[in-house]
Length: 251
Image 1 (spheres, rainbow, N blue to C red):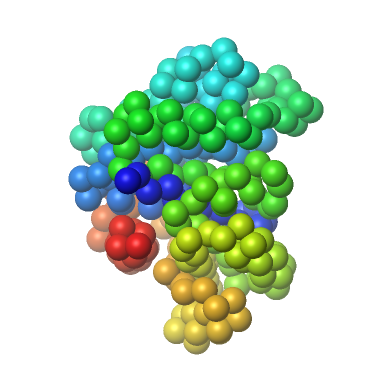
Image 2: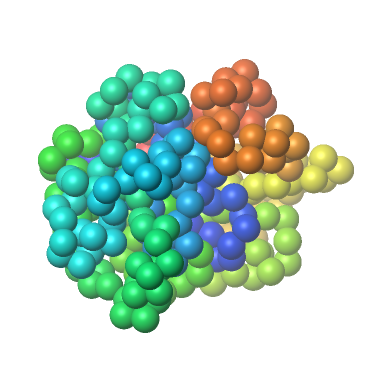
């Protein structure tokens, strides 16, 4: 049975899309068939990490949601872009056109159709994993992604606003009866004790911490031009992604 993994954060700026791209690529590199949905339709961007340029995109998730294209038309094989085999990693991008974003913000979209798109692509591509890069915060759209997840990964930084927002999200996820929940702490200053931080977070939310990621200049310098873990496979950040991926694959 395909596994649905939603990657979410209560606030923007946590590195959620970067995390999703690296995690999905790491899982695909283990020989699994993986697709990523960019459901952050008001502010899409994960296509940059997969080196998929706007001029290469003829159909998007928006076109599917507006019943203009089948979902398979909006799925792009990006495996070769990040050093993987063809037919191993797919991306369904959202539109970066200003008019399309404005239309989504004004009219919203049918969340049932989104769910049908998830199911349709899983079947059409015979996927092992479907990763959903969500829009930050809580809305009816993110409730859907959270509710259908086999694994929900919540990204937070060591920041008071993130702590409070994560508490709300964890409570919502429990009400939606999410089967498995993991936390990932991102952008951790070198001066912080990582083990103590992990223990504090796990005790606060009663949710396991899958990984603790440093605030890395190397990641920042890549500037979203590629997937970090394939460009620097021996880097400590890439090693941490492999540990998180292993936990997800074992769930």
